[in-house]
Amino acid sequence: MTERSGTAAGDAQTVDGTRLHRLLGPPELTWLVDRIRRRLAAGEPLTGSVSLAHPTPEQRLAAERLLGRGPGGGRSLTLRLDTVDAVLRRSGVSPGGLAVAITALTGPVVLRGPARLAEEDAWRKAFARIDAAAEEEPALAPWVARLRGDGLVRRLTGGPEAARSLLDQAATALQALPADPPVSLPAFAARFLGGAHALDDGTALATVTLSGIRALTGFPDGTGAEWRREAWAAAGLLRDELSSTVLTLNLRGTHALDSLADMGEPAVLTLRQLVRRPLAASPPRVHICENPTVLAAAADAHGPDCAPLVCLQGQPSAAGLALLRHLHEGGATLHYHGDFDWGGLRIASALLRRLPWRPWRYTAADYRAAVLVSPEGPPLTGIPVEAPWDSELPDALAEAGVRVEEEAVLDTLLSDLRGVP
Image (cartoon, rainbow, N blue to C red):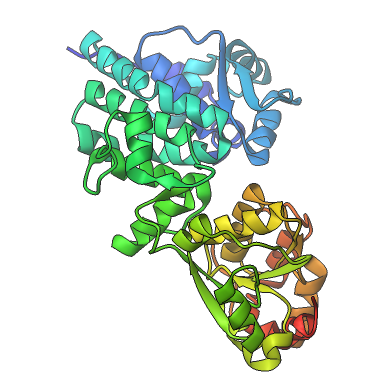
């Protein structure tokens, strides 16, 4: 028979509900309330500390309001339950203490039996290795939280033992990524996962690992064989050497590229070409754009007089990364421009984690100037992100609320490319 933890009627009546919801009820403290409820359900004392890895500024502020002081610095947020209990009692918000407050806030807590507790402990252990990977790489932390909550692992495995094996392997793969230089997917699987077919399409491990790669690289959501190929390639894992390509204009260093540069015609380079026949020379400066419209217009406007230009067509492919890495190592300075929207900033940030580049008319000042010219542009949508190369740029986007695609500033970009070596 299950037992219930609750409060006497007198205790419930003494709780100041309004102040309790203000102190302990904000969404930013849901993690704390959930931890306390789990302890109550397990019959554990509400003593000691609880910690949250990689808290947001809002979560830190909510903890400060609760305690009446700063909770301390560091990468994690740690709260002592004894201190929270004392605050609630002393303030009169909940004279009966923390357990009474949680019950008043969230309802009665069902005490769990030994079998349920053992199962939950097994699931916690199943996630231990992937949790450790998220501690090492903060970009994985939100993904691991979703993975724990959306039921995907339970559906793929059915139980904690199989889940532990799956997640341990996924953690092994993700901790070895991105692969630099790129390697074939079967070779990577054979080296790190014990078999060349471990990451074949349709396997549970491929599903979970590819999901983690999206979190690791910022690769956008999608479906289909081509999307999966490019998603793997974003982490340096190659299905083949021919399907990954990159667009260029007026790069030199092979006979074919020299001939096309003499005519001012674009070139499509495969990963195979870049790996097997690297460019013999790097120009002093290379411009990079996100959209092929810019490269096509540059070829039309300037032909052989156009500055060397690389188009990534959105998320950098393995071929694009291989080319830019070779150019950088050859002494070229990379100058990047992308769309002024959250997706564009996300792509640019992911590239900056892989290679150094300088902004090419891609700062807050450039965005504000573009908005003055086209104030009625499409509305900005999506989840805000940071811009490590210009901390003011995200605020500028949020303030104006307008997307500015590269096509909208095409004339300005083309003027920069005229006759530049």
